[in-house]
Length: 424
Image 1 (cartoon, rainbow, N blue to C red):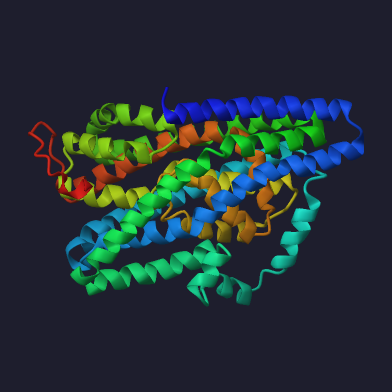
Image 2 (cartoon, rainbow, N blue to C red; image 1 turned 60 degrees about the horizontal axis):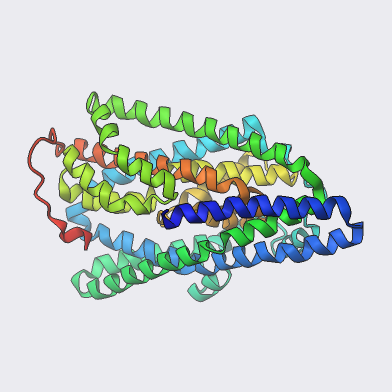
C-alpha cells in the first residue's frame, strides 16, 4: 500500500472518527461543554492550517523564480514560451471562469448552514482589512518589503517580487545558474516538507469535523454530497472542453495521446499528486512524438502555470466558502478575485492540496473567513483526485499543442533518443 493511499485511508478514518466523536458530544453533552469542546478540538485543524501557511511563502518564491529562470535566454525560447503562455493564460481563464459560473449557478455554499460559525475569528479578520479601496488594492499587490510580504503571507506580493527576481536572474545569464540551481534545490526541500505537513492532515480533518458536528449536528453532511456532485459536474465540463479543443488542434492524434497518458492519469488520480507523474509524463509525451526540448521546457512551466483542474476548483471553493458564510460578493469583486487567482495560482507546483493553500490565501484577501477552508477539507481529498488527473490532461495537452504549433510533432514511431540531461 503506497504512502499516498495510506494517507487517504487515515484521512477517511479521521473523518469517520471526527463525525462519531462530534456526534456523541452533540447529543449527550450540555451546551456550554459543547462550546468549549468545539473551540478546543478546533485547535487541531488550526495546527494543520498554520503548518500549511508556514510553507506558502518559500514555496511560491522558489518555484516561481526557478520557473521564470528556466525560461532562460528570452530570445531563444521566447517563441515557444510565448505560445505556451498564450495557451496557459487561455486555459487558466477558461478553468477559472468555469468554476465561477458553476458556483454562481449551483450555489453549493448555501447548502451548508454555519449561522453560528467562528464569529470571533471573522471579527478578527474584518479588523485586519476593513475596506477595499484603490489604495488598499495597490498596496496589496506591490510589496514594500519582501520580508514583510513573506511574514504576512501576501502571496501576490511574493509573486511580484519573484517575477522581478526571476527575470533579472535570466537577464544576467550564466552567472546566476548556481543560484537558480540552489533555489531549485530549495523548492524540492519545500515540496518534501509539504509531504510531511500533509501527514498532519488527518489530525486537522478530525479536529475540523468533530468541532463542526459537535456544534451543529449531522445536518452538515447534506452539504458535502451536493458540493461534491456539483464539483464533478464542473470537472466533467472541463474535460469535455479540453478534449474538444484537443481534437480541434491535434485531430485524430488526440485519441493516441489519451491512450498514452492513461498510466500517468491513474497514478495522479490515486496519489492526488500531479507532481508524482512528472518524469513518466515526460517520457510518454516524447513517445507520443513531442520534441524532447519542447517537453523539457513546456512541461515544467505547465506544472507551475497550468493546473486547469486546480484553477477550476479555486474559484469554485473560494466562492462556495463565501456563500456558506453568507458573504455576498458582487460580480466585480468576483472578477477581481478571478484575476488574483490567475496570478496566485501560478508557481504553485503540483503538490497534493496546494489548491487549498491558494484558496486559504485568497479568502483571507477578500475577507472571507479562511477557517472556511476547514469546511471543505473533509471532502477535499476526493476533489483532489479529480483535480490532479485534470491537471495531467491539461499539461499533456498544452505540451502537445505547443509542439504542433512549432511544427515539431512527429508521428511518434521514431525511436526516442533519451536525452535525460533536462530531468536532472
